Image 1 (tube, one colour):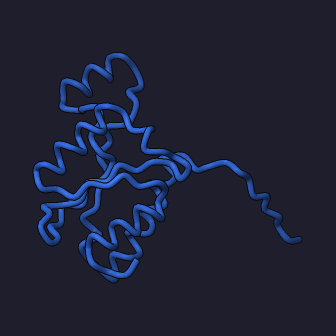
Image 2 (tube, one colour):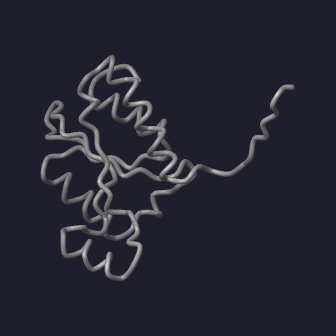
Length: 133
């Protein structure tokens, strides 16, 4: 019996997009080992309780910090920060805090990017590293 798959018009959640990007980076790190240094910054993770929210803030969690960081210098940049949005997202989806962080990090010599979907992020990272996407 053949399985049938129904395509839907739903857009993956940011967490699904991020998981797909990390699958891509794991495979591609065989081609370029610098990709193994890509990591996520769990600032966007919601606290499970008010006490957890207080603890998160007390221990340094800050609103607006980009989702991903690649601490690899390339050309004139110190590293790459990526804010990952859903595929159908818009620049207007950025919060004031996210815009502030992106501006500040850019001023400090980091490359910053807002990417819509894992494919866009993979392409951005590849270009940053100077490798084929």
